[in-house]
Image 1 (tube, rainbow, N blue to C red):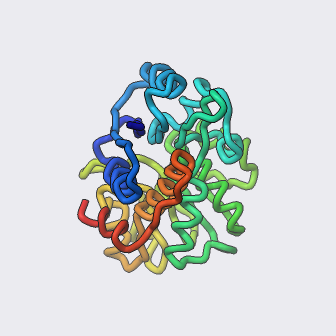
Image 2: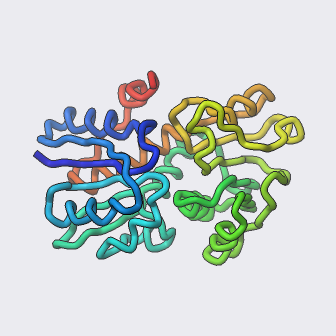
Length: 265
């Protein structure tokens, strides 16, 4: 039996096992997908298990998308460009890290029927997934990408990779068409992002990469004021589809049944 795993901290919120085990069953594969909360010190052991074929594939979630890189033998194209890894597999006896978040986000935005081309985008956060979002937005030809992060150093390090970024002090909001939360603020019920929603007004698109809970306080506050909202569920599904194909060679179906499967959580 093949074994797949998602690692992160926290990890309780992850619906990866539910989705991947559904696809495993649908495709009659002899495999299991589990989730594991780890600390930084555990990464080396996980990668060694991939090398020894004890684990056949790994998904990586916050906060380890950058810290896993030093333990891998090779990086795929998107992982090299974004310096962010969310999928690990073995190829020719080498452990390879790849990034399926870029494709996941692009497909999710297309699915939402929102056109980002020529739009002003405001990003909150500068964590492991943020470079993937910036990379995808650049490919989709946005006019402006603004970024605000509590730790200025992290924002500045992203600007070195993406010189077109406009950095904004945390708490300040500039005029935008779409705002994206890439922070972990929202995973807990009482998490709140300290921005002035009344000042922003309505008619904007609020996008939260968090998909569980379905509506974070960030999205609830935006919805109250007449803004379009969307969580990260479709990005999660699309990035998972690409990971699944890398491990199994099978591109699993994304249909209403799959979307409804995750709708109850």
